[in-house]
Every structure is written in structure tokens, then in C-alpha cells.
Length: 162
View (cartoon, rainbow, N blue to C red):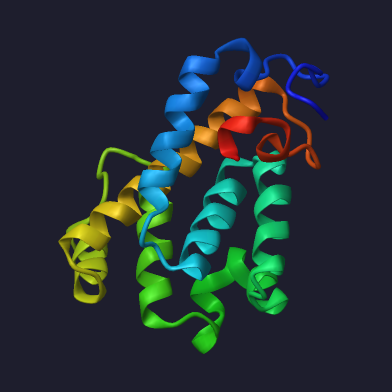
């Protein structure tokens, strides 16, 4: 699909608001810089599951498989707490943070969850993880608001990601 071809969606942000889209892509690149690729995909997949974003789940499942992340690990992601040693301590800390940042309630992020992340990541890495979690939440909201269908991939339809 070319950028000029508008997909069947309620909103297509690359075309409807290209300045915002370009800024979001730049923020996406900055927020994912230095984040371990597997941890980044686990974040994207888990947050997208929590938000019910089929568009992002489809996109990141393909990315995770292309990155050779164990498919069994991806299938166990919704039950990561019960998955034993399938997820290491770093991944478990990040997944707990991703869940609390995605489902913000009155308590926000607990000290225990934040301290667990800081036990595995320095201040810069922690900031990158928080930004990566914030970005996938942003993309989920854009895709859900726009009615983006699973299987469409704006990265292949827009030169901003090139």
C-alpha cells in the first residue's frame, strides 16, 4: 500500500496528521534505543494484550517471530507470572512495570515494582523502558481509535518509518 492509498480505517494518522505521526515515529525511535529487542517485543505484546489492540498484537507477533523469540514464550505471555522460569527476573520486572503503567490506578506504580526494575536496570535504562511502555500505549490508543485492522502495518505504508 502506498502512503497515498488510504486504508479502510476511521482515521489514518500517517495521512490525516503527518506532523504528529512524524513526531511519534521520532519518539518511537528514541524510546526504543538501547532497549533489548526481546524485552522490547515482550513489552509491546503484553501492553497490546492488556489494551486489546489486535493491530499492534499482529504487528509485534510478526516482529517477535522474525527476531526468533521463542513462540512458546509469546504464547505464555498472558500468564507470565505462572510461567515459572520461562521469563527471567529482568523480564518479569519489566512485565510487572508494563502492566502497572498500562493499567494505572490510584496506586500508580508501586515502589516494589519500580525497585525491582531498578535492581536490574540503571536510571537511563529504566527511563528507556518507561518511554517504551508509554509509546506502545500511545500506538495502541491511536490504532484502536482509528479502527486499524490486524494485518495492516503502517511501517510498510509510510516513508516516515523508512
